[in-house]
Length: 184
Ligand SMILES: Cc1cc2nc3c(=O)[nH]c(=O)nc-3n(C[C@H](O)[C@H](O)[C@H](O)COP(=O)(O)O)c2cc1C
Image (tube, rainbow, N blue to C red; front, side, top):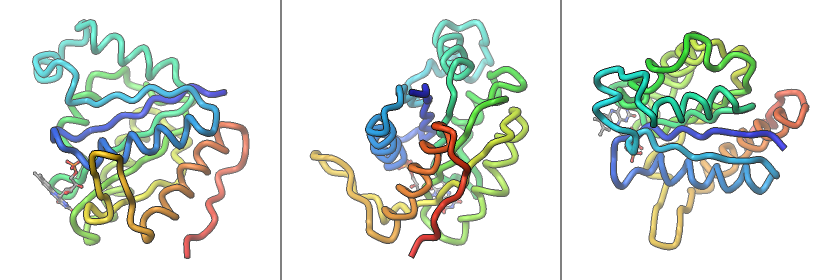
């Protein structure tokens, strides 16, 4: 069993990314992994905005990430990149906080035109944090995520490829090579 931290970086109270992060967390729990889902919007804003490294909530999250074997980083695309909220937390982590960890990047967005934000915006910051093992991630169109009182439903065009990268991430944590079957 590996320990995994899932970061959800949307500031929205009705976040599709958060719903997706919950779905992914359940999937990973189903693989037998130990999960902690962290919504960055629930961390103290004062600590994030004033770079208060010593705030107990920041210390706690930093410790959880440091101790984790795997980290899922999920964010909506804002202005062709990940959110400033997510960055405000990443900026408070130690320089190589993701060294030695397997990392799964996931973005949600309104336009397929910004699918490359995954590789040109999110991936570089993960590498800068020391992540050498960033497995293939996925960009999910917001219109493919339907959130209701009973849960979250993904459009078939997104469900299969997303679950495929999640299952690969889980398998890599179990020691398998990072090969994702082509969607289709
Ligand atoms: C301030 C803001 C900026 C956005 N910028 C982009 C963008 O540049 N590209 C894009 O594809 N979607 C953009 N979107 C759409 C969101 O990425 C998309 O709806 C996402 O799924 C919202 O996730 P959330 O519900 O978790 O906040 C933007 C949304 C907001 C509110």
